[in-house]
Image 1: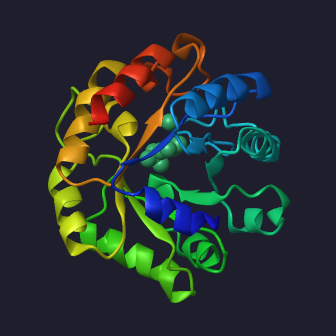
Image 2: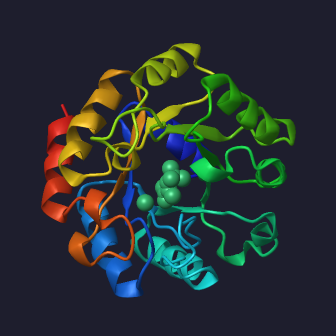
Length: 247
Ligand code: PEP
Ligand code: MN
C-alpha cells in the first residue's frame, strides 16, 4: 500500500513509531524490529545523522545508518523514519527512509524544508524547541508550497523554566492542532520527558489531548545506548506502554 495512505489509515489507532535514538548496528536494529512486529507497530525510527549539542558526542553512523535502517525495514516489513539534516542528503534516494524526519533544531532550516517539499515522501516535522505554533505551521507551509502535503507534525516539548523534565510537552498545542485539523499531530514523549520514568505518563497525556500517534525511543539495553539512553524505554516498559494505550 502507498505509504501515506497507510499512515492515514492508522492515525487515531494511534499510529506508533518506535526505535532507538540512533542506529548503532544491524543487530541492535534487528532486535528492535522484532519487538515492533510482535506488537503490530508499523514504523521503525532510528537516527543516522544525529544533531548533537556537543561536537564530541556520537554523531550517528551517517549514510551507513540509513542503509541499516532501510535494510531492516525491508527485512521486517516496517516503514522507516530517520532524520535528514542536510539538503544534499536528498540527492541519492537509494537509501532515503520512507518518512523524512526534520528535527527540532532544523524546523526553520528553510533550504532543508524546501528540499523536503520536493520529495515524494511523507515528512515528519518536529517543533522547534523555542518555536511558536504559528512559526511551526509556517515551517510546514514551506514544505507544502513545494508540492508536498504529506506532513505530520510532531510535538516534542519546548523550553520553559522546568528543570524536572528535559522539555515541556505542550499539550495545549496538541489539542489546538488536533482541532485545527490541517495536519496530523503526533507526540514524542521521549524528548519531552528526558527520563524514562516520565515517558509513559506523557505519552498518555499526549493521546488524551488529541495526538493521533506517538514516537517513542526504545533500546535493547538503554544503559549502553550511544545517545539518549536515559529516556529510552526498555522492551518491557515499551510493551507495558502498548498494553496501556490499546483500549
Ligand atoms: C530525534 O527524534 O532523534 C531528535 C533528535 O529529536 P529532536 O529533534 O526533537 O530533538
Ligand atoms: Mn533522541
